[in-house]
Length: 290
Image (cartoon, rainbow, N blue to C red; front, side, top):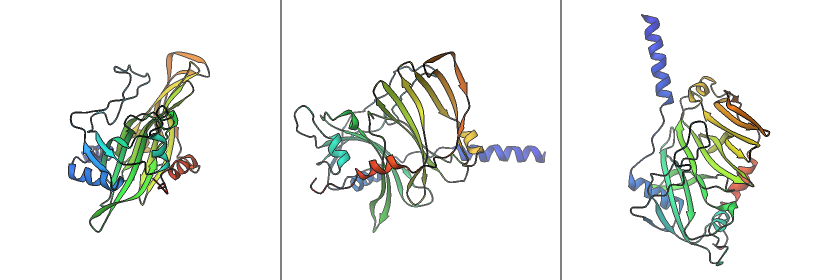
């Protein structure tokens, strides 16, 4: 009987550990977060409007799938000139030469673990802009803290911008079993005959720290095509040593697998410096004359 109780307790603790933290729905808090991230801008909700950049509409199992994690979120219109180089690029109008000053923003906010802070995950583009595909839209992560009863931006992270249109997944959960939530996010990218998504894991401690990054989907002509689905229970068992997936490969180096090859790889944490992330984040520095 004791062994059954211990086993039951183990499964209960595992289920609790795998439970995902839900985004906050308090509208006053959400608006306060927006005002802190975009100070001095006019902010209004676009009534009756949703943006859904998902494709395909009816994805098949093990095939490429690009859901829009923010498809059900409200859309907010934020008016103000570009405040940094990333926004300057994304607000460009290559046809008329007149940049847009109106953002269409969707986002979610979460409690920052073990603190009174907030995590904001935003996806936005500039209305009527025609930018280069290097800045089609912006995916942004923000750490907010309170000071003198006001929210302030403590840290920001700009996701890959090249042919970026949507965030596929946003999950706040304890993926390494240490009792503290991490952020797991998938963000799309593209290029010459290429489409893919990157899965990133961030520690939510004193700041946003990227600890893991891997391509979770890729389609390059008929040379390479695979999907990798995060295996949370198996990753938790690794206790931070690696992150595990179920990988389905349809093409590899031009070779077709029929049926598709299924494997279960685990990858170690990203040890190299996040140089690309650091380069992108420098584009968030305020413009001298916005």
